[in-house]
Image (tube, rainbow, N blue to C red; front, top):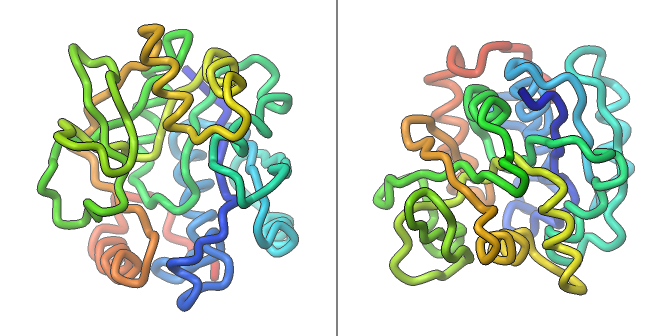
Length: 244
């Protein structure tokens, strides 16, 4: 079972800027998104988390220094938060030190079982992506979600705006060293670029997690939905401390 997490918290979060100048510190139910992710990973059995920072890095570091519970956290910088998220993934490679990891997006609010399921599944030498096959789920922003096409459980194509997807990227992966090799084939790759490269090698699998709820907290509408969901179903998240 994977026991190391990688949490991407480097982006600008421009669509949520009106509600929070720093997206990872945006509160949902009175608790910062980054704390939801770290506490969820701890509940999933992950004991160490590499947090990749960029925009508002100092604010995030200060916040993390005030945490007195949860997994051991190591903070690493992305070289440029304006570059695609694959560059941030590459920034975590040295700290991961050849281990497999559970990779997640800081702005995705998910139930801890999603992290646990991916930790148990493993990366299979490349990467495994949690996918949602509920194409009509009302919480999903179809104009922004990363779409996925699959065949026999393997990714054949992935990206925003992809026509005729059969599932959506839930923002949680199990990854192995093959991900970094795939990302290094391009100068400024997105994570989707890396997954497409792995797919061509037959190393990009999926795990259907459509039974688990999640939401990409990317704009004020999604934030309101996330607040409503968390307040009505907080028992699904376990620990209930509120950290602003």
